Figure 1 (cartoon, rainbow, N blue to C red):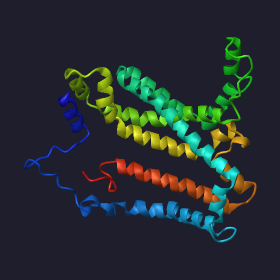
Figure 2 (figure 1 turned 90 degrees about the vertical axis):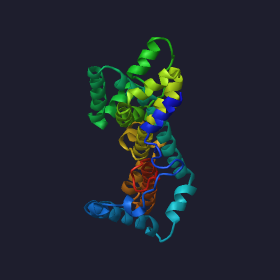
Figure 3 (figure 1 turned 60 degrees about the vertical axis):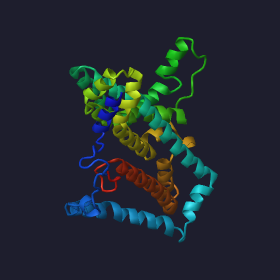
Length: 305
C-alpha cells in the first residue's frame, strides 16, 4: 500500500526532495511567481474598463441611493422578506451543487471507463443538453412537472399517488430544473481530471492489496479533487445568479436574488437596493474565485510548494 501512496503523491505533484536528505524544497520568491505579469496588461485594461468600472458604479449606487450610507445593506438583511430571498438563493444553490456532484461524478466516471467510442457518445449527449436553449429546457421541465404533466400522470396511473404532486411554482421544481441544467458544468471538469489520471496509479494500489473501495477513497478520489472542487464552485456560483429557471419554475412566492434584483429595478425603480443585492452576489463570486485560485498550485495566489 505504501507504493500506492507514493504513486499518489507523485501524481499530485508532491516534491520528492532532491538534494541533501532533510532539506526542504526551495520556495519560489514573489518576483519569480509574478514573472511575466507584464503580458497581462492588455487583459487587465480590458477588465478595468468592462468589469471594475461598472462594479465601482454598482457599489457607489448601493451606498449613495436614495441617501448616502449603508441603509440598503441593512434593509437587505434586516427585512424578513428580503432575508427570505437570501435564504432561498443560498439554500437552492447549495442543494443544486450537492445534487449535481452526486449525479455528475458517476456520470463522468462512466464516460471515462466505457470504451472510447461509447464515452464520446455519452460526452456528446452531455454537451447537447448544455447547448440546447435554456428557455426550452426549462419549459420542458414545466411540462413534465406540472399537475397535469407526464410525471404526475405516470405516478397516478401506477397507483403510487392519489393526487398530483405540487412540483412547480415552488423550490422543488427550481431544484430539479437547475440540477439538470448544472450537471454538464460539473461533468466536464471532472471527466477531464479523470481522463488525466494514470491507470498505473490505481493498479499499484490493487497490486499492494488494496480493496476496490480503499483504492477509490485513498487513491482515485484524491486525484479527482481539483476537478471536483472547480466544478462544484462553478455550479454554486452559477446557481446564485440564475434567473430564467427560478422565475419559470419557482414563481413570485419563491423568489431568488436575481428575480429580486430585476423586480427592484423594473417595478419599484429602487436602484440602491438592487445595487446592494447585486454587489452581494459579486462579492460572493470574488471570494469563491479567490478560493478557487488558492487550489491551483501554479496560481500566483496559490500556496507555494
